Image (spheres, rainbow, N blue to C red):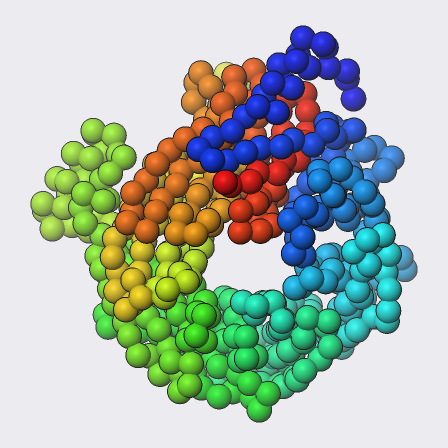
Length: 502
């Protein structure tokens, strides 16, 4: 790594130690020793002074991945995570935090089977301890490798339980068979069951999994019509919630919105155990034209409340250029559909007093080709991560308001690495933290929204373009009610920071 000149060091020191905004106080770690390191994940197990990071080394002769323990932003311990391929067997390790425990997830894959085991990690010295505990072991079927040990997992709200939903191998015309296992926060198996979905494997897509504090598992699936039955002008899929306990499938519900298309959907389990779901719907299937919200009773799993709200024209055109706004209004007056495009559902945040905040983001990824005078063609992938959408649901399950937070992030050929946002919740305030780019300055921005939908924008860190300070939103973590950790890079340094909210 190149040494920082004294003048530049003073600039960075001022930037990294004095930056603060609106009751957010920032403390920065020492500069990381190597520029060829990248923090990709941050985890916490209950102590706000302590956190754990997954750090990747891209050195030429040392391409390792580390689990690291930090105390007051100082690196205390480090553990190398296994990644090897030997005689046709691929072995790798990943890390999961569950309640106040850390576990290494040991994945082993060969041509004949695939297995996943959990082993506890001593949170002080990062050593492995105790026996490995089997999560699953699946024998692969020759010629039917459509499922290679894929799974989805989910933690309960209190993190006392974790579930794994594991797909079985089989041909595309067979029924979808899955094993569901539930473990406690020490990875001790509580129960398991094997279920057969009444849908074909090739037509079923597992979307998400949730588990309640009591151990009920909710599986969200999308089931498509066969190719012969598909019609361009009609809905060619249905969404189902499969409710599972230790005895197997308890209930099966088709999620419908009359004649509307469900475009984006997420499930969550509320404080009282009710299943809550919401998302965006479409009138014709091509745009997001409004939002919906529904709750399923925790006892009988029947839908007990449902509400829908179309997007107002003012909401749709908010933040558009004058030309785009005029075009959209003109199209609307002709009776044509003018809903939102490229909206993806990001977060589902339950409120303490009931209700929820639904969060979406404009994400548009596309490629362009340019050819120079010599006939050489260059392909560029563009990443647009723009406006944030926040929709409030009241305790009765009705939609209160919908707000659009304007954000423009356009990068190319970088995978959108520094784009999108990180969410921090503090009482009834939700803070969205992201990199803000413009021609003169690049700031680390905070957009806050309260329970009434009032939005406030501030700079968490103001920095000149030459510093190019950026965070990676996926490498940030809220470690307590009033503390979060961020991983930031600039042209000359990589650092971690702890931010406290007064």
